[in-house]
Image (cartoon, rainbow, N blue to C red; front, side, top):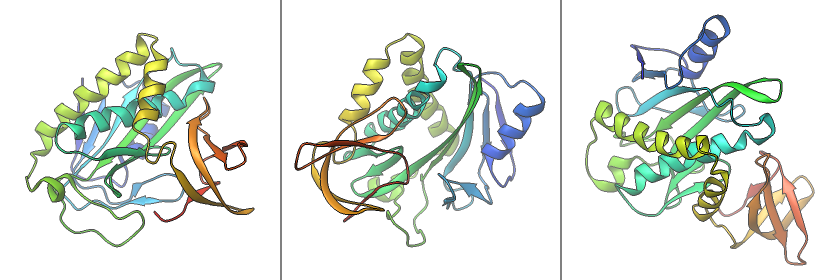
Length: 243
């Protein structure tokens, strides 16, 4: 494993993807900074991180064994790796679809995955992770943010914590490498926030009640309404209300 430690960078994902366009980075290369000035979240979202308080890094993977159409497996495995790590420290850890990590109803970690597809397989994958570690105050936004330190009352040494987290991520990734996709899919559902609970949702067509009954291989959320009709929803096409 190689760790490239940057004093400061706008985005570790941008740095990693730029390098990968011109050179080959080995699998499990980590791009780490404790001062990320323009962290990115899903779509147009940003990621707030106080300098030297949290973990902000990108991980380079080479998941050629995963078909391009099944790339959501990477998101599921990474989400589970973070969840496994956090469950060693505290309770009430869940995954809010597709890959926000919550403690209770508050967001403690976010993931941004960018894949380069070559033919029918994935050439490389850059997984950006932001984990709120020791930060004590956040700007108001939804869902409300929290850090591990705020929940447990402890401070966490970033370098030591990074190695522990990477071990959890590697364990879940190796499950994929061993071809056990079903364990990843089932464990993801078992940790999914409000799985099989009735909730209100809003789409462009209006508001309706439904329960999460799964996800498909493309990462779409499967919702079943009160009439028993199941529909598949891509990211950003649906919003859970009351959250």
